[in-house]
Length: 248
Ligand SMILES: *[C@@H]1O[C@H](CO)[C@@H](O)[C@H](O)[C@H]1NC(C)=O
Image 1 (cartoon, rainbow, N blue to C red):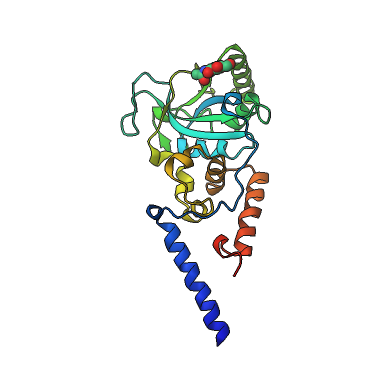
Image 2: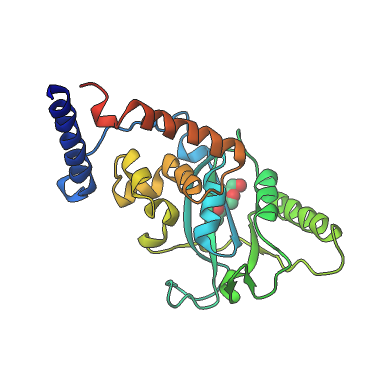
């Protein structure tokens, strides 16, 4: 009987904790139970890449998972319209901007992920998404990236001659970040994971490496090795109890 009321009390705390933490306006945060990836170099050592490969929700998930990717932002690029918006993006393509640590991952490796994560031969769309905004683009900055992009596109084309690789290679121009509701879209659909990282405020969520990783994890688009690694950490937290109740 005593045991019952004790666990009942714990359950009440648990529910309270869930309710309290679910209301970001109260400003109560859990301590970060999955340690924030440290060891990221200062921003001036990061490099930036931008790709278009269909829906930017999906593109952000694919790249955000990778070790060495420090930050991801979805947005619009490749067009001429100033200040595009989701409902009127003009001639831009949905894009993802990737800030990465070149000591851990390089442009050539990002290109491999780019090619393996979409169908570069699909015309006027990607998967179920139809339209010019879903076209395939590699944005390049400088001659070395131009060369790497051209070589990788040619290699992709030689895999099969029966259809044309539609991917464009363009000089990197202005990248317009998309509206907040499109950033870390897959993660935002998963309240449990959001809570695990402490219900970060929007600006923090957009900059967080951990959020970028979990966004990919939520979409199940991480490479299997990374998906398994994150599974392990999440399951450990579930097994040890809700973070706020580590010690009762
Ligand atoms: C292009 O690369 C150079 C370094 O090689 C960097 O300073 C510059 O900011 C990059 N441009 C863009 C638009 O990212």
